[in-house]
Image (cartoon, rainbow, N blue to C red; front, side, top):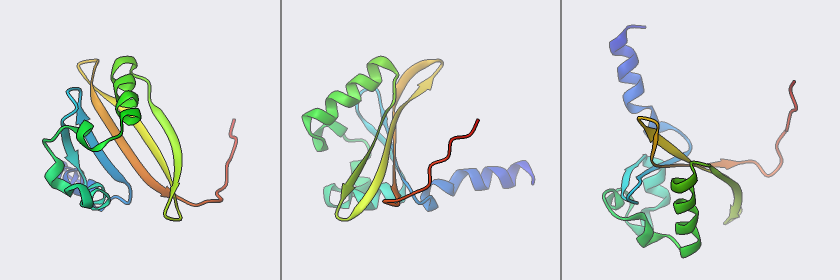
Length: 120
């Protein structure tokens, strides 16, 4: 694979990825939403939310969690069930020059029953 082929693949994979990807900056500005994230958030504006403050579309409890991730650099990981769909939510800091610069949220559908392996 050539470098240009790699760059072409790397530039667009996010929009065909099956999980929702949302990226915010440390000032709570939504920087990026892949197509799945935009679809999941369509009733709040979808990609029109990019550039907006994420606090406007989250409950106070969720805002406090984001603040904690930004302050501590520790991820917040949990699962939810909504409308008969189970999801894994992975919220973790992203860094620039070693400093927390924002939060990435991955939201992916997972089966209700799934194998768990302990590997050593």
